[in-house]
Image (cartoon, rainbow, N blue to C red; front, side):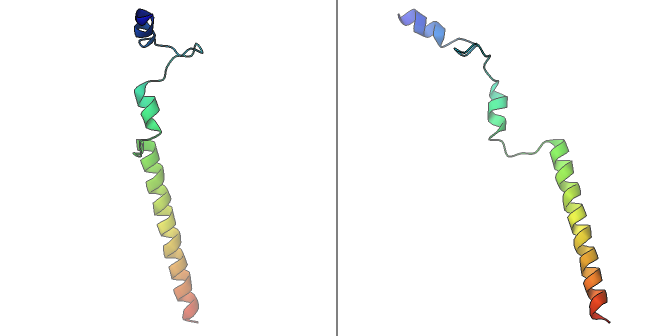
Length: 66
């Protein structure tokens, strides 16, 4: 019985027949770092928001002068 348990612990597939996921794939959901494309998308979104804010500030200053 013991040898069966030892060999079962070394299996590379789950009992359902699906291959096990790699450790890096499992950890990715816990990883809070962004990929390069995610970083670029976040930076461009922040830059666009900043430009919109600057436009709104410019418009509100123009409205108060009238």
